[in-house]
Image (cartoon, one colour):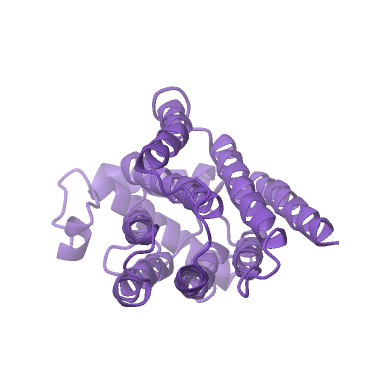
Length: 319
């Protein structure tokens, strides 16, 4: 019965991945190819940018150029006219026409990314004070905080200014977090206390990670492949914790990992409802980032309680 629940859970993760891919393929777009936008952009580049104006400080600090600012102003002018006419708002360059703030292209996603990073940062002290000092994974929990903060830092940077460099740092950092989560799960589930075995396992997982980012960097930046690679590692992570949950019936917190995984799956489903941004700021992607903030609190709570339980019960070393 318990394995049946786990199977249905993982099947739901696969189905969600398929639906996400369908949503990406069918997303509304094409505003940047419309004649009205192309004409506006050409006029702006050929007039305003001939003698480039001095942009506001916030735009200069976030590396806006005259040309990129022209793209923004044309997009916003057309979008406002579109709304006034009651027509459908479309995407430009694969993104919704957000109202920027202080040079940030997607202020809501930036804000929620920062809050996700804060959720990791605030648990550093809790790990220090509440995870037993002799617990074998304590140093790895500190590393998880650092990896998580790095990921959300680059998410905030990417959503501030989207370019090829910030995009790669965002995607590669997110992939590292997913892979490190699997690494942490395997260490915990198998009680890997030997430094040598910890290093061997780390190298074993770093090899596919570096192959992954090398492929995206030097061969093809394939969005669909990147998504499926992360979904695959995420499924392995959930299968590992699911196995642990069903094989440790006496553990009081055994369902917490799958509960967190379920909440992440539900939060990810927000991506399926791709809609023009509410108040021209909050879109489905930003709300997905907002939803993950509280999940980190649940996850760290499990890690802390589990470490305390492990020390109290003094389970035997397996590796």
